Length: 112
Image 1 (cartoon, one colour):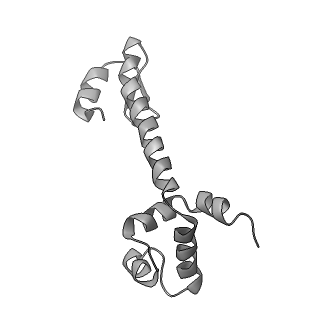
Image 2: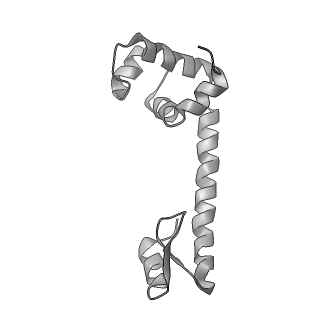
């Protein structure tokens, strides 16, 4: 990722607008190439998030759903959720929470 101090020095004094990728200052002139690194970082981050989401299996999601539907704990209490689940660890639970709607559509669909 781009060094924030370097980033701010490079764009100082240039007409400014927020960069949609790093939320830093985006130059309006030829120094716009600076933000190629920001875009590349954002694209890489999306790829990594997609890979992480793909590591969540249907069994993992259904295990999470069973704990959620049991009503035994607040789902933000990850330590309790780990204890109540069959095979989930902290990282998987956080990944499920971040991508809940996508995973629900993928593994359950619109069942009512």
